[in-house]
Length: 245
Image 1 (cartoon, rainbow, N blue to C red):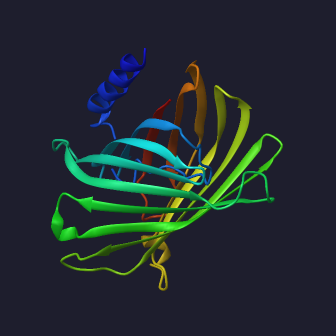
Image 2 (spheres, rainbow, N blue to C red):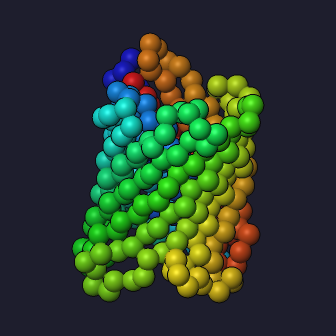
């Protein structure tokens, strides 16, 4: 059973990698960590830009809850532009730290640190980090994240960039939940881009977790994001499928 699911996830990654961009396949981080949990994680996204061209990306990763408050994951990332072929883009190492015990305070807090090594070494190393927050009101779960990103040891080092994520989700049933995620990129953290150059998008999403055995489950989410600023893609479809064991 486990081998069959692993094979299916891998096949999906190969099949759907053309449907999916680092930006479009972005997902909303949560601050919680499941100690001892392992997962195979596939993410994908496709964005339609202003001139009707499409950019797409996908990633396939393996994660592990190494400590009660630390989850680490490695990804291989792929992308394509327009009608061009899908190609390997980067390696990524993501680390998430849970800073408070779940429910200990009105707001749960965490911190994420990502290190990416692009295939194009002239881009140097990309570092992304920031605090993660989550709270609940009955069946409603709210998330808000502040993220900073910068390239180091690149041919042309740029400024520290700032972005955000937010999400409101109604936890109707474990197998089916729904809500609204939002993403934004505003430019340098200390000198934001003009409003018409910033990227803001949000839209409807579905979520769910389907048990497939003892301590095993498939978790999914998908969203259709629509631009709310001139600098964003016209629309973005993104999805994520995880096999947890």
